[in-house]
Length: 338
Ligand code: NAD
Ligand code: TYD
Figure: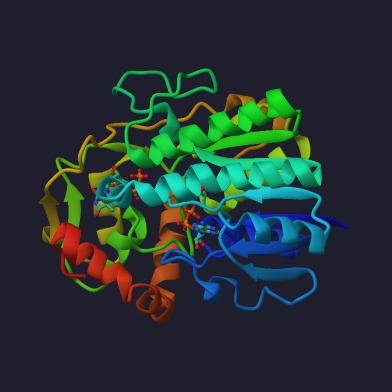
């Protein structure tokens, strides 16, 4: 049986991916996660069984532990999702992004090389391409890397490191770059769960600037299916863009969430814009469609409705993850009461 070392498996996308793979069978999964503010072991409730899904608590910056884990579990492939992932936090403090996203990725690459893993799937983002104008063609894999935020710069750096290990050391790595994900278990500092919880709790929905920024929303299940296809069928050193064909302005999404929650539209509050806020992301996913056979199945309208319902039904999870550091970070840096 193939053993996957899956980093960041207690986070949003990672935990959905672990559930999907565990449900399908055929793999042993070693979840490797530092359980930062964004990682919750509760996201894997009912999934970790100590044999087909095991959990190792640790940082990818701990080279000794990464090597020991690869050896102990005789790891075949790496699916690398662990990251600092929130743009707003990278604007306040970039150092943790360099440490985890760049140095941590390097530690994993070195370990993968030394141990001789068969394949390394590196999960990246469309944000490495920078921003688009309203009439620009969507990002393709040939679009130049032009990151805006420290988060995006750290992810672009890690992509370049991965490519350098393919070229220099001949490791078998594949990179995926997806658009904004949404779905269950997303930490509620990100736009869709934040707006949903505020709408449910009848608190203001803080829309940055004019709210006319565009994101290309991808349901997390569709993303995870794309990751598995890239792992199984992707070409060595290839990059695959994964997008949701769901371009929406933020303000439209906020209104849609208010409709699903019977919230009053006056709850929308235009607040100070994010620094250097990327105006539009959109993905050309033709390569993944034609070479991997990947097709996203969720429409944004159905996916958003199902996601809002999930948050309505999982209020204790929301209260749990929103405690402590989460509240103090936003109060200190964004002067918001959460
Ligand atoms: P997330 O913030 O929800 O989860 C990140 C996970 O990584 C957490 O469980 C955290 O504990 C863990 N982690 C952080 N630092 C670590 C370290 N040093 N060692 C081990 N574990 C550590 O992130 P997400 O939204 O699930 O994103 C997963 C990946 O997908 C990231 O690489 C991100 O850049 C990428 N991505 C996300 C999106 C999105 O919309 N969420 C879009 C494009 C790409
Ligand atoms: P986010 O979920 O942080 O993802 P990203 O910055 O990686 O795209 O934000 C999505 C969009 O929503 C982005 O244009 C910023 C905007 N946004 C707000 O308007 N208000 C908020 O409180 C947050 C967190 C984001």
